[in-house]
Length: 413
Image (cartoon, rainbow, N blue to C red):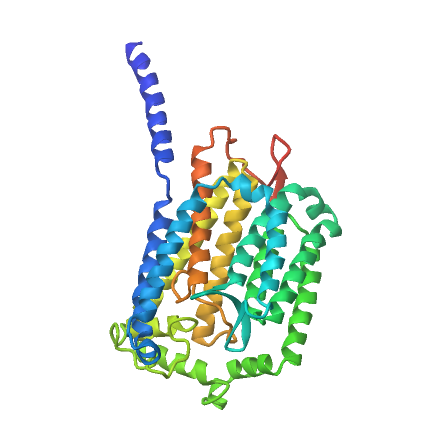
Protein backbone atom coordinates (compact mmCIF):
# COMPACT_ATOMS: atom_id res chain seq x y z
CA UNK A 1 0.00 0.00 0.00
CA UNK A 2 2.86 2.37 0.73
CA UNK A 3 4.25 1.82 -2.75
CA UNK A 4 0.98 2.83 -4.42
CA UNK A 5 0.57 5.76 -2.04
CA UNK A 6 3.94 7.11 -3.11
CA UNK A 7 3.47 6.39 -6.81
CA UNK A 8 0.28 8.43 -7.21
CA UNK A 9 1.62 11.85 -6.18
CA UNK A 10 4.78 11.19 -8.23
CA UNK A 11 2.65 10.71 -11.34
CA UNK A 12 0.79 13.95 -10.66
CA UNK A 13 4.09 15.79 -10.18
CA UNK A 14 5.39 14.44 -13.47
CA UNK A 15 2.31 15.67 -15.28
CA UNK A 16 2.63 19.06 -13.66
CA UNK A 17 6.28 19.29 -14.70
CA UNK A 18 5.41 18.32 -18.28
CA UNK A 19 2.70 20.97 -18.40
CA UNK A 20 5.06 23.55 -16.93
CA UNK A 21 7.79 22.69 -19.41
CA UNK A 22 5.33 22.89 -22.29
CA UNK A 23 4.19 26.34 -21.20
CA UNK A 24 7.73 27.58 -20.60
CA UNK A 25 8.59 27.03 -24.28
CA UNK A 26 7.36 30.35 -25.60
CA UNK A 27 8.48 29.56 -29.15
CA UNK A 28 8.09 26.42 -31.21
CA UNK A 29 11.76 25.42 -31.62
CA UNK A 30 11.62 23.78 -35.09
CA UNK A 31 9.73 26.78 -36.46
CA UNK A 32 12.09 29.22 -34.75
CA UNK A 33 15.26 27.49 -35.95
CA UNK A 34 13.98 27.12 -39.52
CA UNK A 35 12.90 30.77 -39.64
CA UNK A 36 16.27 31.98 -38.32
CA UNK A 37 18.12 29.82 -40.85
CA UNK A 38 16.02 31.14 -43.76
CA UNK A 39 16.57 34.76 -42.68
CA UNK A 40 20.30 34.22 -42.14
CA UNK A 41 20.75 32.48 -45.49
CA UNK A 42 18.68 35.22 -47.09
CA UNK A 43 20.97 37.89 -45.70
CA UNK A 44 24.06 36.06 -46.95
CA UNK A 45 22.63 35.54 -50.42
CA UNK A 46 21.26 39.09 -50.72
CA UNK A 47 24.73 40.35 -49.88
CA UNK A 48 26.27 38.03 -52.46
CA UNK A 49 23.70 38.61 -55.23
CA UNK A 50 23.60 42.39 -54.96
CA UNK A 51 27.30 43.36 -54.82
CA UNK A 52 27.67 44.18 -58.50
CA UNK A 53 24.48 46.17 -58.94
CA UNK A 54 24.97 47.91 -55.58
CA UNK A 55 28.48 49.02 -56.47
CA UNK A 56 27.41 50.28 -59.89
CA UNK A 57 24.34 52.15 -58.64
CA UNK A 58 25.50 53.36 -55.22
CA UNK A 59 29.28 52.97 -55.10
CA UNK A 60 28.99 50.59 -52.13
CA UNK A 61 29.11 46.82 -52.72
CA UNK A 62 27.11 45.96 -49.60
CA UNK A 63 24.56 48.78 -49.90
CA UNK A 64 21.59 46.40 -50.18
CA UNK A 65 22.92 44.14 -47.44
CA UNK A 66 23.12 47.03 -44.95
CA UNK A 67 19.59 48.11 -45.90
CA UNK A 68 18.31 44.56 -45.49
CA UNK A 69 19.90 44.40 -42.03
CA UNK A 70 18.17 47.68 -41.16
CA UNK A 71 14.85 46.28 -42.39
CA UNK A 72 15.42 43.15 -40.33
CA UNK A 73 16.13 45.15 -37.16
CA UNK A 74 12.91 47.10 -37.65
CA UNK A 75 11.01 43.88 -38.42
CA UNK A 76 12.24 42.26 -35.21
CA UNK A 77 11.15 45.28 -33.15
CA UNK A 78 7.71 45.20 -34.74
CA UNK A 79 7.52 41.44 -34.20
CA UNK A 80 8.19 41.90 -30.49
CA UNK A 81 5.26 44.30 -30.29
CA UNK A 82 3.01 42.04 -32.38
CA UNK A 83 3.75 39.02 -30.19
CA UNK A 84 2.36 40.86 -27.16
CA UNK A 85 -0.99 41.58 -28.85
CA UNK A 86 -3.64 38.96 -27.99
CA UNK A 87 -5.21 37.30 -31.01
CA UNK A 88 -8.66 38.38 -29.86
CA UNK A 89 -7.66 41.92 -30.91
CA UNK A 90 -7.29 40.81 -34.53
CA UNK A 91 -10.51 38.80 -34.28
CA UNK A 92 -12.50 41.81 -33.09
CA UNK A 93 -11.07 44.16 -35.71
CA UNK A 94 -11.26 42.00 -38.83
CA UNK A 95 -13.86 44.17 -40.67
CA UNK A 96 -11.87 47.30 -39.78
CA UNK A 97 -8.75 45.72 -41.23
CA UNK A 98 -10.57 45.10 -44.51
CA UNK A 99 -11.51 48.77 -44.66
CA UNK A 100 -7.87 49.65 -43.99
CA UNK A 101 -6.93 47.35 -46.88
CA UNK A 102 -9.08 49.32 -49.30
CA UNK A 103 -7.69 52.64 -48.06
CA UNK A 104 -4.09 51.42 -48.33
CA UNK A 105 -4.57 50.21 -51.89
CA UNK A 106 -6.07 53.57 -52.85
CA UNK A 107 -3.14 55.48 -51.37
CA UNK A 108 -0.76 54.29 -54.08
CA UNK A 109 -2.73 56.21 -56.70
CA UNK A 110 -2.38 59.56 -54.90
CA UNK A 111 0.13 61.73 -56.82
CA UNK A 112 3.22 62.43 -54.78
CA UNK A 113 2.53 59.55 -52.39
CA UNK A 114 2.44 56.57 -54.72
CA UNK A 115 5.71 55.51 -56.31
CA UNK A 116 6.09 53.77 -59.66
CA UNK A 117 8.74 51.06 -59.98
CA UNK A 118 9.21 49.05 -63.19
CA UNK A 119 5.86 50.25 -64.49
CA UNK A 120 3.86 49.29 -61.39
CA UNK A 121 2.28 51.58 -58.79
CA UNK A 122 2.69 49.28 -55.79
CA UNK A 123 4.63 51.46 -53.34
CA UNK A 124 3.96 54.50 -51.20
CA UNK A 125 6.85 56.80 -50.46
CA UNK A 126 7.68 58.24 -47.02
CA UNK A 127 10.95 60.11 -47.39
CA UNK A 128 13.69 57.49 -47.84
CA UNK A 129 11.30 54.62 -47.04
CA UNK A 130 9.03 52.86 -49.54
CA UNK A 131 6.32 50.40 -48.50
CA UNK A 132 4.62 47.80 -50.69
CA UNK A 133 1.18 47.74 -49.12
CA UNK A 134 -0.03 44.60 -50.93
CA UNK A 135 2.13 42.53 -48.53
CA UNK A 136 0.18 43.84 -45.54
CA UNK A 137 -3.12 43.37 -47.39
CA UNK A 138 -2.56 39.61 -47.62
CA UNK A 139 -2.04 39.36 -43.85
CA UNK A 140 -5.12 41.45 -43.04
CA UNK A 141 -7.24 39.30 -45.38
CA UNK A 142 -6.29 36.24 -43.33
CA UNK A 143 -7.43 37.95 -40.12
CA UNK A 144 -10.73 38.98 -41.69
CA UNK A 145 -11.50 35.56 -43.17
CA UNK A 146 -10.60 33.75 -39.94
CA UNK A 147 -13.03 35.93 -38.01
CA UNK A 148 -15.72 35.60 -40.67
CA UNK A 149 -15.46 31.80 -40.70
CA UNK A 150 -15.93 31.74 -36.91
CA UNK A 151 -18.84 34.18 -36.86
CA UNK A 152 -20.69 32.75 -39.87
CA UNK A 153 -19.75 29.08 -39.79
CA UNK A 154 -23.31 27.83 -40.45
CA UNK A 155 -23.87 30.27 -43.33
CA UNK A 156 -20.57 29.34 -45.01
CA UNK A 157 -21.40 25.63 -44.85
CA UNK A 158 -25.11 25.76 -45.68
CA UNK A 159 -25.78 28.74 -47.97
CA UNK A 160 -24.33 30.26 -51.11
CA UNK A 161 -24.69 33.75 -49.64
CA UNK A 162 -22.49 32.96 -46.67
CA UNK A 163 -19.87 31.61 -49.03
CA UNK A 164 -19.97 34.53 -51.49
CA UNK A 165 -20.17 37.54 -49.15
CA UNK A 166 -16.48 37.63 -48.15
CA UNK A 167 -15.45 36.85 -51.71
CA UNK A 168 -17.16 40.01 -52.95
CA UNK A 169 -14.85 42.03 -50.72
CA UNK A 170 -11.88 40.05 -52.00
CA UNK A 171 -12.88 40.84 -55.58
CA UNK A 172 -12.81 44.56 -54.72
CA UNK A 173 -9.29 44.17 -53.32
CA UNK A 174 -8.27 42.10 -56.35
CA UNK A 175 -9.47 44.83 -58.73
CA UNK A 176 -7.46 47.46 -56.86
CA UNK A 177 -4.38 45.22 -56.96
CA UNK A 178 -4.81 44.60 -60.68
CA UNK A 179 -4.90 48.35 -61.30
CA UNK A 180 -1.39 48.67 -59.84
CA UNK A 181 -0.86 46.01 -61.45
CA UNK A 182 0.07 43.19 -59.05
CA UNK A 183 -1.16 39.95 -60.60
CA UNK A 184 0.99 37.77 -58.33
CA UNK A 185 -0.44 39.22 -55.12
CA UNK A 186 -3.97 38.65 -56.44
CA UNK A 187 -3.21 35.00 -57.20
CA UNK A 188 -1.70 34.34 -53.75
CA UNK A 189 -4.48 36.20 -51.91
CA UNK A 190 -7.32 34.41 -53.72
CA UNK A 191 -5.74 30.96 -53.45
CA UNK A 192 -5.13 31.43 -49.73
CA UNK A 193 -8.73 32.59 -49.30
CA UNK A 194 -10.03 29.55 -51.19
CA UNK A 195 -8.11 27.15 -48.96
CA UNK A 196 -9.36 28.90 -45.82
CA UNK A 197 -12.96 28.80 -47.06
CA UNK A 198 -12.59 25.11 -47.78
CA UNK A 199 -11.24 24.52 -44.28
CA UNK A 200 -14.25 26.47 -43.00
CA UNK A 201 -16.57 23.86 -44.47
CA UNK A 202 -17.65 25.37 -47.79
CA UNK A 203 -19.17 22.86 -50.21
CA UNK A 204 -17.10 21.33 -52.97
CA UNK A 205 -19.60 22.25 -55.70
CA UNK A 206 -19.29 25.90 -54.70
CA UNK A 207 -15.54 25.72 -55.13
CA UNK A 208 -15.79 24.05 -58.51
CA UNK A 209 -18.14 26.74 -59.82
CA UNK A 210 -16.06 29.52 -58.33
CA UNK A 211 -12.84 28.08 -59.72
CA UNK A 212 -14.39 28.04 -63.19
CA UNK A 213 -15.27 31.71 -62.80
CA UNK A 214 -11.77 32.59 -61.56
CA UNK A 215 -10.04 30.61 -64.30
CA UNK A 216 -12.21 32.31 -66.93
CA UNK A 217 -11.52 35.77 -65.43
CA UNK A 218 -7.77 35.20 -65.15
CA UNK A 219 -7.64 33.80 -68.67
CA UNK A 220 -9.42 36.90 -69.96
CA UNK A 221 -6.93 39.12 -68.13
CA UNK A 222 -4.08 37.27 -69.79
CA UNK A 223 -5.55 37.51 -73.29
CA UNK A 224 -6.45 41.21 -73.09
CA UNK A 225 -3.04 42.22 -71.66
CA UNK A 226 -0.20 41.92 -74.19
CA UNK A 227 2.54 41.88 -71.52
CA UNK A 228 0.82 39.05 -69.62
CA UNK A 229 0.45 37.06 -72.82
CA UNK A 230 4.12 37.72 -73.55
CA UNK A 231 5.06 36.42 -70.11
CA UNK A 232 2.96 33.29 -70.62
CA UNK A 233 4.34 32.49 -74.05
CA UNK A 234 7.87 33.36 -72.92
CA UNK A 235 7.53 30.97 -69.99
CA UNK A 236 6.38 28.14 -72.27
CA UNK A 237 9.34 28.55 -74.65
CA UNK A 238 11.90 31.03 -73.28
CA UNK A 239 14.58 29.99 -75.77
CA UNK A 240 12.44 31.20 -78.68
CA UNK A 241 13.33 34.79 -77.73
CA UNK A 242 16.21 34.53 -75.21
CA UNK A 243 17.17 38.21 -75.49
CA UNK A 244 13.72 39.75 -74.95
CA UNK A 245 10.62 38.05 -73.52
CA UNK A 246 12.55 34.96 -72.39
CA UNK A 247 15.63 36.80 -71.08
CA UNK A 248 14.98 36.51 -67.33
CA UNK A 249 14.03 32.86 -67.47
CA UNK A 250 16.89 31.78 -69.73
CA UNK A 251 19.41 33.52 -67.46
CA UNK A 252 17.84 31.84 -64.42
CA UNK A 253 18.04 28.44 -66.10
CA UNK A 254 21.69 29.06 -66.98
CA UNK A 255 22.30 29.78 -63.28
CA UNK A 256 20.70 26.48 -62.31
CA UNK A 257 22.79 24.64 -64.90
CA UNK A 258 26.04 26.20 -63.68
CA UNK A 259 25.32 25.29 -60.06
CA UNK A 260 25.27 21.51 -60.65
CA UNK A 261 25.53 19.49 -57.41
CA UNK A 262 27.49 21.72 -55.03
CA UNK A 263 27.50 25.13 -56.73
CA UNK A 264 30.29 27.35 -57.97
CA UNK A 265 30.93 28.76 -54.49
CA UNK A 266 29.59 31.61 -52.42
CA UNK A 267 30.13 34.92 -54.20
CA UNK A 268 31.31 33.25 -57.44
CA UNK A 269 28.08 33.61 -59.42
CA UNK A 270 28.46 34.90 -62.96
CA UNK A 271 24.73 35.39 -63.63
CA UNK A 272 24.43 38.05 -60.94
CA UNK A 273 26.93 40.21 -62.89
CA UNK A 274 24.19 42.11 -64.76
CA UNK A 275 22.99 39.01 -66.64
CA UNK A 276 20.15 38.05 -64.31
CA UNK A 277 17.72 40.94 -63.64
CA UNK A 278 16.42 41.30 -60.08
CA UNK A 279 19.05 38.85 -58.83
CA UNK A 280 18.68 39.95 -55.20
CA UNK A 281 14.86 40.12 -55.20
CA UNK A 282 12.60 37.95 -57.37
CA UNK A 283 15.39 35.73 -58.75
CA UNK A 284 17.43 35.24 -55.59
CA UNK A 285 16.69 31.52 -55.68
CA UNK A 286 18.48 31.20 -59.05
CA UNK A 287 21.62 32.75 -57.52
CA UNK A 288 21.32 30.31 -54.60
CA UNK A 289 21.16 27.45 -57.11
CA UNK A 290 24.25 28.72 -58.93
CA UNK A 291 26.40 29.39 -55.88
CA UNK A 292 25.25 26.60 -53.54
CA UNK A 293 24.11 24.02 -56.11
CA UNK A 294 21.49 21.33 -55.68
CA UNK A 295 22.52 20.90 -52.05
CA UNK A 296 21.64 24.52 -51.28
CA UNK A 297 18.38 24.30 -53.23
CA UNK A 298 17.26 21.22 -51.28
CA UNK A 299 18.25 22.88 -47.99
CA UNK A 300 16.10 25.94 -48.73
CA UNK A 301 13.13 23.84 -49.86
CA UNK A 302 13.50 21.64 -46.77
CA UNK A 303 13.48 24.66 -44.46
CA UNK A 304 10.33 26.01 -46.09
CA UNK A 305 8.67 22.61 -45.70
CA UNK A 306 9.51 22.64 -41.98
CA UNK A 307 8.11 26.17 -41.58
CA UNK A 308 4.88 25.27 -43.39
CA UNK A 309 4.38 21.98 -41.55
CA UNK A 310 4.99 23.59 -38.15
CA UNK A 311 2.45 26.32 -38.95
CA UNK A 312 -0.11 23.67 -39.84
CA UNK A 313 0.72 21.58 -36.78
CA UNK A 314 0.35 24.59 -34.50
CA UNK A 315 -2.98 25.35 -36.18
CA UNK A 316 -4.12 21.76 -35.71
CA UNK A 317 -3.22 21.82 -32.04
CA UNK A 318 -5.04 25.11 -31.49
CA UNK A 319 -8.06 23.75 -33.33
CA UNK A 320 -8.10 20.65 -31.15
CA UNK A 321 -8.33 22.86 -28.06
CA UNK A 322 -11.26 24.81 -29.46
CA UNK A 323 -9.40 28.03 -30.42
CA UNK A 324 -10.88 28.08 -33.90
CA UNK A 325 -10.00 31.65 -34.87
CA UNK A 326 -6.37 31.08 -33.88
CA UNK A 327 -6.33 27.87 -35.88
CA UNK A 328 -7.69 29.54 -39.02
CA UNK A 329 -5.06 32.29 -38.74
CA UNK A 330 -2.20 29.79 -38.45
CA UNK A 331 -3.62 27.68 -41.28
CA UNK A 332 -3.92 30.77 -43.48
CA UNK A 333 -0.37 31.97 -42.77
CA UNK A 334 1.06 28.51 -43.43
CA UNK A 335 -0.80 28.25 -46.74
CA UNK A 336 0.22 31.80 -47.72
CA UNK A 337 3.94 31.18 -47.06
CA UNK A 338 3.76 27.86 -48.87
CA UNK A 339 2.04 29.29 -51.94
CA UNK A 340 4.35 32.29 -52.23
CA UNK A 341 7.49 30.18 -51.81
CA UNK A 342 6.18 27.62 -54.32
CA UNK A 343 5.38 30.29 -56.92
CA UNK A 344 8.72 32.08 -56.51
CA UNK A 345 10.70 28.83 -56.73
CA UNK A 346 8.56 27.68 -59.66
CA UNK A 347 9.21 30.93 -61.53
CA UNK A 348 12.96 30.66 -60.93
CA UNK A 349 12.97 27.06 -62.18
CA UNK A 350 10.88 27.87 -65.25
CA UNK A 351 7.82 25.79 -64.34
CA UNK A 352 5.56 28.84 -63.75
CA UNK A 353 5.11 32.17 -65.58
CA UNK A 354 7.09 35.13 -64.26
CA UNK A 355 5.46 36.86 -61.27
CA UNK A 356 6.65 39.73 -59.13
CA UNK A 357 6.68 37.72 -55.91
CA UNK A 358 9.58 37.61 -53.48
CA UNK A 359 10.95 34.51 -51.78
CA UNK A 360 9.52 34.74 -48.24
CA UNK A 361 11.99 35.72 -45.49
CA UNK A 362 14.90 35.71 -47.96
CA UNK A 363 14.53 38.12 -50.89
CA UNK A 364 15.61 41.74 -50.58
CA UNK A 365 12.79 44.09 -49.64
CA UNK A 366 11.73 45.76 -46.42
CA UNK A 367 7.97 45.34 -46.90
CA UNK A 368 8.15 41.60 -47.60
CA UNK A 369 10.60 40.91 -44.76
CA UNK A 370 8.61 43.01 -42.28
CA UNK A 371 5.25 41.40 -43.03
CA UNK A 372 6.64 37.87 -43.18
CA UNK A 373 8.31 38.33 -39.78
CA UNK A 374 5.01 39.63 -38.42
CA UNK A 375 3.17 36.63 -39.86
CA UNK A 376 5.58 34.12 -38.31
CA UNK A 377 5.36 35.99 -35.00
CA UNK A 378 1.57 35.66 -35.07
CA UNK A 379 1.96 31.90 -35.51
CA UNK A 380 4.23 31.94 -32.47
CA UNK A 381 1.47 33.82 -30.63
CA UNK A 382 -1.05 31.16 -31.65
CA UNK A 383 1.26 28.49 -30.26
CA UNK A 384 1.83 30.49 -27.07
CA UNK A 385 -1.89 30.98 -26.43
CA UNK A 386 -2.50 27.28 -27.10
CA UNK A 387 0.15 26.26 -24.56
CA UNK A 388 -1.03 28.66 -21.85
CA UNK A 389 -4.82 28.44 -22.30
CA UNK A 390 -6.10 26.98 -19.03
CA UNK A 391 -9.69 26.85 -20.23
CA UNK A 392 -9.05 25.02 -23.49
CA UNK A 393 -10.90 21.80 -24.20
CA UNK A 394 -9.28 18.45 -24.86
CA UNK A 395 -8.57 17.51 -28.48
CA UNK A 396 -11.63 16.14 -30.27
CA UNK A 397 -11.50 13.16 -32.58
CA UNK A 398 -13.29 14.20 -35.73
CA UNK A 399 -14.76 12.41 -38.72
CA UNK A 400 -14.70 14.43 -41.93
CA UNK A 401 -13.87 18.09 -42.36
CA UNK A 402 -16.42 19.73 -40.02
CA UNK A 403 -18.27 18.69 -36.91
CA UNK A 404 -19.65 20.26 -33.78
CA UNK A 405 -17.88 20.09 -30.44
CA UNK A 406 -19.64 19.81 -27.10
CA UNK A 407 -19.94 23.58 -26.76
CA UNK A 408 -21.59 23.80 -30.21
CA UNK A 409 -18.60 25.61 -31.71
CA UNK A 410 -17.52 24.70 -35.23
CA UNK A 411 -14.37 22.66 -35.56
CA UNK A 412 -13.00 21.50 -38.91
CA UNK A 413 -10.69 18.58 -39.37
